[in-house]
Length: 387
Image 1 (cartoon, rainbow, N blue to C red):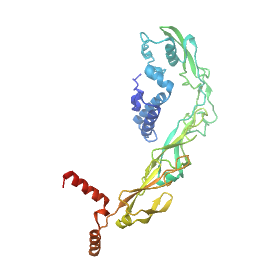
Image 2 (tube, one colour):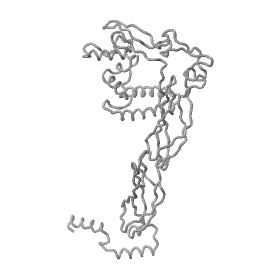
Image 3 (cartoon, helix red, strand yellow):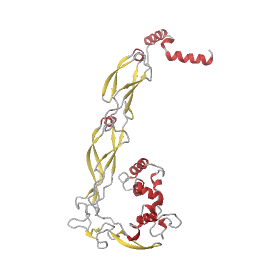
Image 4 (cartoon, helix red, strand yellow):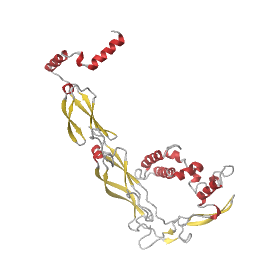
């Protein structure tokens, strides 16, 4: 058996990582190596399986604890099999207690001491896997919410065989090797004596049934990949990179198990006017020299339409005004953020001779009292340089 990679290395996280960090790393890698994104790419398929396997263990607190303590031997019963006991991680001198050994045997053989075994129903319903899709949105669609049509590629129960995997007119037969249990009893001699355990039946692959003639539609798998068109209501206020869930729209389950969910991740296109900061919205408004000096009533764009705003006299460049409750609605909640408007002074260009003369005459009438910042600036220079 080839050496397995460390699960933390597979996800690119440290052993101290929390659940959220592990989940974030998994989603990023699952999206990168998903078979739908990399069709006919065997290397990506292997990577996807490694990532999924690592997340399955590290996202489960009990499995993660056993993995941290015993490595792969603590979570994979097949790891180390046929290696002369090397997969047990070395019992002698390891300082294991009776309960520790019981846990290890339970992982390897499916049962504890005394020959007891635990079996599972091979035909028990299995929940389908979750799927993920990406949805691009315009800025206003994300702010206000929108109804969108999406296509979801998923595994669906085969209509021909209704999920049994058997050809039309036939049905799966009970495996004669395991009598339909999916497991067979085996005895193994260990340093602790002969231990009886249960393992998956090799004849039926642990399913308990054998399909002699496979369904041609699904090749005996019971499910087929298909695309379903859905209409989804995107919640108002969702931000770039955030996700929401469509319950029950993932892969159909096996053995009539419940379906998984569909995770919808949104990417929001930038807007030419507005910029988002959390639930607040920012924009810039160019003002003329006269508007800044004398004040003026201007029109300000918002996500709800245009509003009027009175610019105060003597407004300086970079001044920020606040429009209450004109920001982004809180997702699935009441209230919304603010809109902030930054004043930008636009200096006129291409002045004709009359305009220039008028501006010079106006400037000649100004004194230091009219320029608060200029007076303060030159006073600081004078005090610093002793001029």
